[in-house]
Image 1 (cartoon, rainbow, N blue to C red):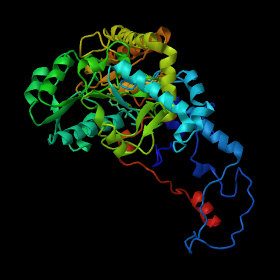
Image 2: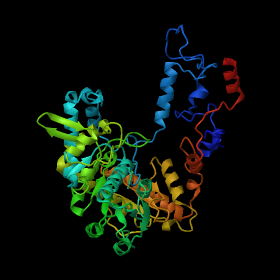
Image 3: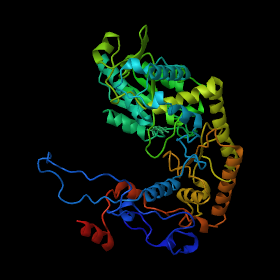
Image 4: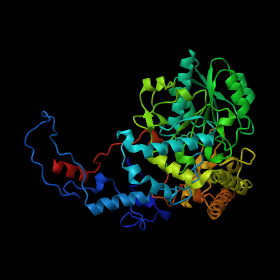
Amino acid sequence: MLNAQGRATDTGTRGEGGRATISGHRGLDHEEGLLFEIGRREVTGVDLPDIELTADRLGGLQRKLPIGLPGLTEPEAVRHYVRLSRKNASIDANLYPLGSCTMKHNPRLNEKMARLPGLSDIHPLQPQKTVQGALALLDELAHWLKTLTGMPAVALSPKAGAHGELCGLLAIRAAFQARGEDRRRILVPESAHGTNPATAALCGFTVEDVPGTADGRVDVAAFQERLGSDVAGVMITNPNTCGLFERDLVAIADAVHAAGGYFYCDGANFNAIVGRVRPGDLGIDAMHINLHKTFSTPHGGGGPGAGPVVFSERLAKFAPLPLLIHDDNGFRLIEDMQEAEAAGHAPFGRMCAFHGQMGMFVRALTYMLSHGGDGLRQVADDAVLSANYILASLSDVMSAPFEGPCMHEALFDDTFLKNTGVTTLDIAKALIDEGFHPMTVYFPLVVHGAMLIEPTETESKETLDRFITVMRELASDAKAGRTERFEGAPHFAPRRRLDETGAARKPVLRWRPSDAKDMARVEAAE
Ligand SMILES: *Cc1c(COP(=O)(O)O)cnc(C)c1O
C-alpha cells in the first residue's frame, strides 16, 4: 500500500516474497524518510550566534509563529542525501537505453575542464575584456557546430532541445513578419516528438499531421498535398523517432522552399549522423542540437541541457541576441538590438537573460576536441552499429514494425506479446528487476506498444550481450506463459508499481504533518 506521499506503508509490498524486515530497510538499501519526517526542530548542523534584532524594519510583517523547518545534524544530513543519491538510476551506474535520449557516457575529462576556475568562476556581467578566453571558447564551439552541420550561423543560448525548437520557430515567424506574410500552418509528421507540435502551437501556428509510409518515413505525396501558400514550414526529425533515416529530405526541402516555407529539423538524434551527414546539405533552414545528447553533457532529472540552433543563410539574420563577433578588439557580444540592426541583423529578440549554459558549452567542446572530426564520425558509426546489433539479436523473438537496418535506435512493437497477457509496460518493469533502466515505451505513438531502445556507442559488446540475453529471456517467458516475474514487477526496486499518471496529473507537492506524532511535535514547538 502506498500513502499520499507514495511511501510504502507496508514493508511487505517492497520486497521479494513479502518478507518484511524489523527496520523497514532492505539490506543496505535504506528506507529514507522526508526531511520533515526525520528532522527535529531543535537540532541543527551549524552553530551560529543568536541574532539580536534591534529594530523592526519589516513594518510588522515578520512571522509570528516559528517557521517549523526540520533540523538535522551534519552526519544525518550527509547520510540523508547520500542515501537518496544511491536511489538514482544513472548512466554512471548502468546501461540506460532510453530511446530518443542518447544516454551516453559523460567523459570525466569534460568535468575536469568545466571546473577550471577561469571557466567556472566567471560571471556573465563581468566586463567582456576580462572573459576573452570564455568568449573564444563560445566562438570555437560555434565553429564546430557550423562545420559539422554545414550551416552558416548558430544561436548558442537556447537551454534545451525544446527551447531550441522555440528559437527556430520564432526565427521563422520573424522571417514571415519581415516578408509581410501571415502564414499559420506548420506540417508535422505523426511520428514527431511531442515537443514539435507543442512548440508550433506555442508560437501561434496551427499544427497539421503528415502521415507516415508503411516503412516508417514521411509520406512525401501526402506531404505535398498539404503544401500551399499558407504553409509556414515543416518540422521533421532526422533520423526520425522510429530510428530511421528520412530518405526524401532533399525532395521535402525543395518542395517546402518552392511553396515559400521553411524547413525546421529536429536534430535531437544527430548522434546517428554526426560527421557523416551535414544537415545544411539537405536543405534544412534551422535545427537544434541537443549538446546533452550528441555531445555528452550530462542530462536527466531536469538538470541543465543546452540546445543551440543552427540556421541557414535564409534565416541567419533573424537569430536571437546575443551575437558573438570577433574583430581587431577581440571577441565581443552584441546585446543591443540597434547595434545588431546596424550590423545588418534582425534578431527576433533573445531566448534567455544571459548567454546560455556555459558549463555545458565547455563540456561539449571538450568532447569535440578530444574526439576530433574523425572520432565524431566514429561515434555515429558505432552508435548505429550498436543499435543494429540489438535489432538483429532480438528480431527473431520480438517484433520490429519496420525493416532494418536502423539508425541509432532499435524499435519494437508489442505484436510478439499478443495473447500473452504481458504488456510493454510489464517488460519495462521486469527490466528494472534485472538491473537495467527500461527503454522508452509507448513512443513513438505511431507504433503499438512501442519499445524504443537506444544503446549508444559507449556501451561495450559485453553489456549489450547481457541486455540481449535478458530481453530474449523475458520475451520467451512471456510467450511461454511464465508470467509470474511480470506480475506487479518491479519486485526488487525501492518502490513497486506506482500510479505514474496520478503522480503527473495530481502531484503531491506539499508535505503536511500526517500523523499525530508529527502534529504534536509542531504544536509543542509553536
Ligand atoms: C530529446 C528530444 C527533444 C527535446 O529535447 P529536450 O532537450 O529534452 O528539450 C525533442 N525532440 C526529440 C526527437 C528528442 O529526442
